[in-house]
Image (cartoon, rainbow, N blue to C red; front, side, top):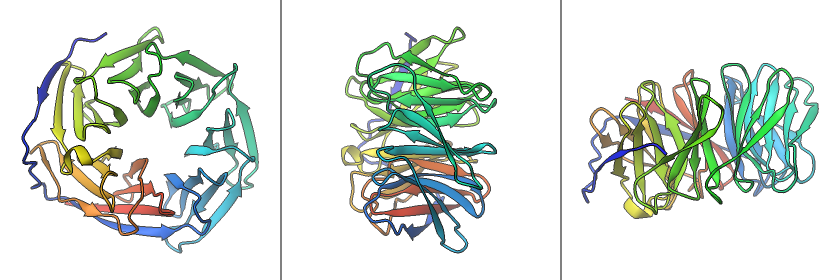
Length: 323
């Protein structure tokens, strides 16, 4: 267990003076009530996403709005998708496998998870070797898939029912938000899970990101806070979000200038709000036109200088950032 200190911001008046803003465009997905989510930008005309409720992956061309659908195995329950030169890799959340889709032929190869019981692949990300790190929320495990052998290894999370959820990879290591408790997790030099205690017992980190300085940012879904952990000093700072305890912050991403962007999903319509870590102030929240329902995951694409997300209102969204 790491020893941490806390600098907690408790002001009831949340400043919203940061100047950055977003311009949001949404594309309606033609497959109704399919929960499109987790877009991955593979090129300016190739944005992949999955339909969690309808067992498909799809490719959006943002220039034309055209979408191509790839049907996945029945019951796959795809939760996340990431793309490299080998293919588009989806998390078979309800079918205990990682799937690879050929980007030209759309042929699917399945890689079953070892063992028995819950094998619910949740959120995946590549490391610099092309290996895949992933979380398995219900199984309470962290997983790794080797890029050369496709071998999959699983580790149990030390805290029972910790619900490993959001994940980022930084300097070759996975960093995980444990949504069922007030902890983060990483792997130490011996590939042993190492937990990191956060302040407040009711803190429930759901997603996390990392900036260029190696500071880890997380959103407290239960309390409505944005938090930052500095591994070099073990210091944690937290700021209440503009909507406070009603915020229910979920999707988040860090951009190229170190702004942290958060989806407030406890308000209707959902709102996108940014945080300037230099001035420690929030931007003015911008409402999602479709309402959003719940924005569950968000990525920053450096090429388009935009945030990409899916919504429960059946759209794929792009939020272009300006400063």
